[in-house]
Image: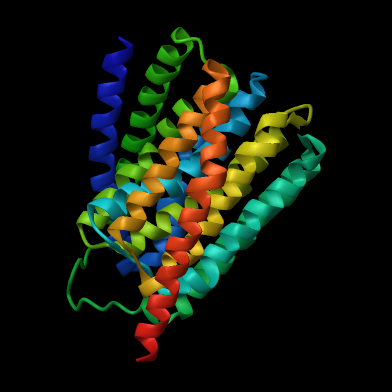
Length: 350
């Protein structure tokens, strides 16, 4: 039954992603806002619904490790796994606004969350600050999207449809994504527990990937359809929503403060911040995420998951892997990205 849930969930995710992308494109046309803004708000918030349901539910049931691990792990998966997989399949064009404003904002939100967690817990006051932040973020995005030059419809006569039918497509797509994500998570968690994994590891890996599948399906489908703004906006907006709304509502709805595990505080959250920071040089060079950069992100995600699982199943292997990352992978990545930035800057100068 668990494997059947996995298959049914995956099928529902793929169908829901296709319907959602179609509806989002038409919705952007109907409202006169850019597709990037729709990706950063409507699509991003909708595909993050599984994270919201799982984290709030876990926090209310006392499974705080799953609640925190789900958000942190999902944000890591969004950048390393989803952007990596999408770019490896097809290079992703990145709008200049994303590099100037949206990625720095994602980094700032990630850093703010890490500072809130330094005392080892998330209080209701932290939750209030985060929830206020998501309202401010949404208002800023919609307001900026209506004023930006991108908001003009640049494909004359394309995708002209009524607002009602667009909304129906979005709702149906989100419902299929939510249902598929739920089925996939239920089956995955049952199997992971049978394998003897801890709650934090389950939250950081199985649940995080499962609840990120709507983002993955949506971004990959959007990339294939040439809608790079939706693909990138979905990931960046989802990361912001996960921290501000999902973690904020989780902290607000629980009677006590949500404890943050030491492992998450000193390893997983810094990895989340690092994943957000690495987007800047990758998105900056040539305003496109190249295939080799996508492959690099995928390698990082495989190493991260290997470390998380290995730290509980084979500590000696995890220690060796950690040293390899610190002394080999990170310096090599810094050199590769540095060369890429310099080469791109010289090409522009000539």
